[in-house]
Amino acid sequence: MSAIADFSTYKVISPIRSALGDDTHVTVHWMDGRTSPYHLLWLRDNCPCPHCVYPVTREQIVEIVDIPEDLQASRVTLKDDGNLEIFWQDGHASTYDAGWLRAHAYDEASLAERERLKPRKKLWDSSLAVPSFHYAEIMTDEAALLAWLLDVRDTGLSLLHGVPVATGALASVAQRISFIRETNFGTLFDVQSKVDADSNAYTAFNLPLHTDLPTRELQPGLQFLHCLVNEATGGSSTFVDGFQLAEVLKEEDPQSFELLTSIPIEFRNRGKSSDYRYQAPIIVLDENHEVTEIRMANFLRGPFSTAPDTMPRLYRAYRCFIALTRDERFRYRHRLEAGQLWCFDNRRALHARDEFDPTSGARHFQGCYVDRDELHSRIRVLQR
Ligand code: OGA
Ligand code: ZN
Ligand code: ZN
Image 1: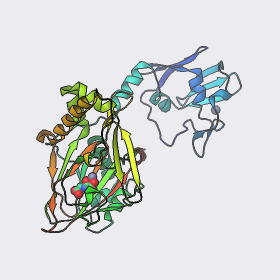
Image 2 (image 1 turned 180 degrees about the horizontal axis):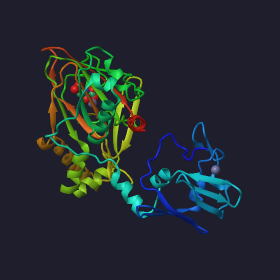
Image 3 (image 1 turned 30 degrees about the vertical axis):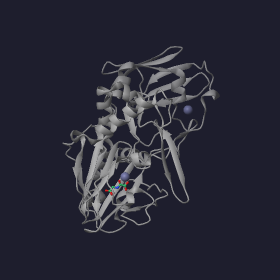
Image 4 (image 1 turned 135 degrees about the vertical axis):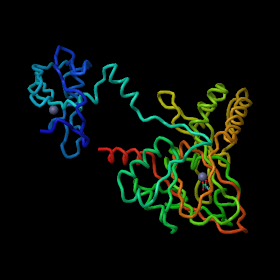
């Protein structure tokens, strides 16, 4: 019987020295001095045995209410292989892998350590040395693929070289991660100046710094932009780290930061057969009050709607944010050549393009999206 109901394995950081049960907890003393109490219900809830977890899916098949709330352990032992074994008063037996147990310990030191080891976002500005990878490497080498994906996760912007200059080639890059997210603009979209444009993106105008599809409840996580032709004058790319801007705004103008994290702004995209709208703050914070998302595209914004008292302050905050996007300190610039491809976190890195002159030459990019979940899942599988 496996002692881990998981597809991952867990290194034994420190073996168990001893384990002691009382009527509420089992307390594990680790060789390295750490002490981790586990509630009895928590332990039973996480029993990995085949009666509790279906071994094929590794998903739980019992619910905690099926277990008496006051269940007691009748015996707690440390097995010869170093794993923990518990015999319960209802006759059930559970074995816990020592590595798994340590990885899920919730004593104060373990919680703090896990917080410390969380991947850190690397904030950047105009001086960014953009993480760059070669198509041939990420397509064939799993280590190169993982290195690239970790940079996409932590920096939120990357550049690929040597992508075949062929329509559709970006799909094979995106599919190295996972499914492509289809939208009303297609599975792959062609960024070209079009007569019958259904977005400012499909004109030759300058596109100010924005995220794509802020009009959706879930903005696409990753965006791929592949350059097939860039022979027109103009059309350079600019990126800013939206998380960095949010931090600077918080420092320099806390009141504006507060407004942009709390007042919902409507973004809309209306076409002949679609009408997408979504309202959410421009800066989204997570449960730890850390910035987790930027939602911003001036050309897709609806009229502000907030109390009369707040309106002038909202305009001030919004102007302040746009002024920061225009600040050269934060703007990383590069002009894509055919065969280069941007892959970036669309919910973090704002992107822009300079206007171009379609009479001076051709310009054709292709784009597509993949959600953040797919990135994180691929990283975890590669790390197993
Ligand atoms: C877009 C976009 C950038 C470019 O299509 O949303 O931002 O360089 N395009 O054309
Ligand atoms: Zn069980
Ligand atoms: Zn865009």
